[in-house]
Picture 1 (cartoon, helix red, strand yellow):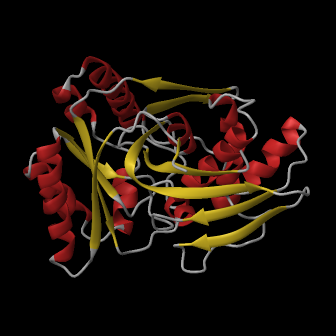
Picture 2 (cartoon, helix red, strand yellow):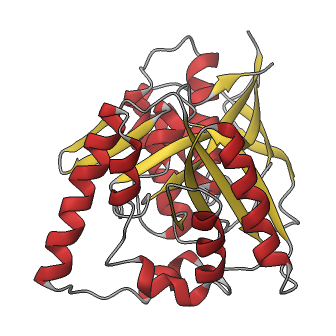
Picture 3 (cartoon, one colour):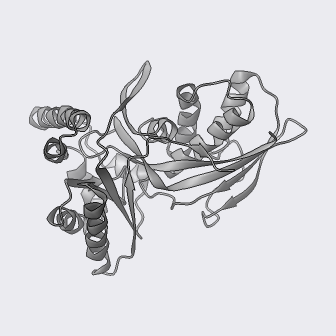
Length: 309
């Protein structure tokens, strides 16, 4: 096999109460990467689409190629590669855009070279793409993009992630408004210290979310989707956030919060029909004040990246 085309999914991180430890993959949107073998040892990016010229072709600074280079160094391979990156979702959307690129690239190379490493062993390389993109090698987006499903990052030292089963009828609505939130700004405004009261309440919701997912207890999932620490601070960066959230809840969503650093907003629902209605309500809430928004409805993607050509 001399070339391969990979799709890697978008992800929702934090998931309300689980700041920097929860994340899950969705069916769409996502990124596509094509990797071709070369006859020499060069690594080059030949084409990037869908990002309005915002991404560099410098392989030492692009989130798709940095994990590939780290992977080749670690495995001792001198295989040269040509990479095409096709962005199928907006940058800075709060949907793990850089994670999808990182995962697609390193997954593609691993497949192309005969799968010497497992998916979980690819995680540290994928995290290096996050370091390039936003300055921090966090795993709450790359882990679900790589492994699929709902993932918990239990520890970074040592790195320990695991998947949590999710109910079949759990659907997510994601609405991405046409506004921009810088990830570094969204992290900078967070407080370094939080009250004991809020910490205890947040810990209870984290435990409740895990139990609710594992037991398919939709009522418990709903009551656990409260963020006492991050959402109240980051909401100020997203116009109409509270109105959109209320529209989702009034339409039947289990809960609603910010996806990653924003500006995308996600909601959980029981059943696709409800999730579709929630999508319309959330989108309309943005658009009635002149903010255009894209909406996506998906189950929890259990597969992660996949070969599409």
